[in-house]
Length: 231
Image 1 (cartoon, rainbow, N blue to C red):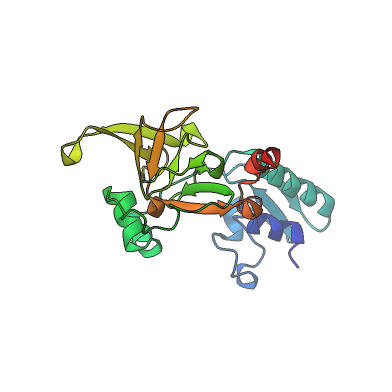
Image 2 (cartoon, rainbow, N blue to C red; image 1 turned 90 degrees about the vertical axis):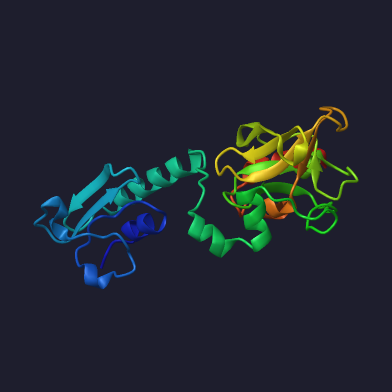
């Protein structure tokens, strides 16, 4: 029987490159032959982190407490590391996104005003990139602009936003994109209310709304405090 610590490590993303009998555990993808570590003992346990570094090894029965400590250390590291936001492949995006979400984020199209999910959304929460999940805006900074698109005075995480000059449609505008996925989000204008005087005019199709009561479960628990202070 494989010690449960090793099973936990595998399910939590730790690399488990070797198993005593691969046929017994077909669900653990990525396992290689027992010869990978030139091991002659059975059972034996190896725990390797996501970077391929050996974090624990033990030949023979026992030392389950040691395995638990190794797994616990990996879980602590995972919980303290900043999340990584990546852009999926174009093929994956075409499968996962709706046509309007794909056209807006990938081809800089603009959705229709007053005919989108978030222009009139007053629920508390945050807005993340529909492509990568990177947090972009907060309902605390959302205001009624009268334009028919969700509008914000500032980004929730400035590091997740980038801007560029946009001279399409015979206009001089500032385009807003997500920093990690490079998704087209909308444009920013200097006619917004205080305190910034800015209006981040976004496309609902580029956003996914995460309500306050789902922040922790979806990995955005660090923003709960902002809403608790508001209350």
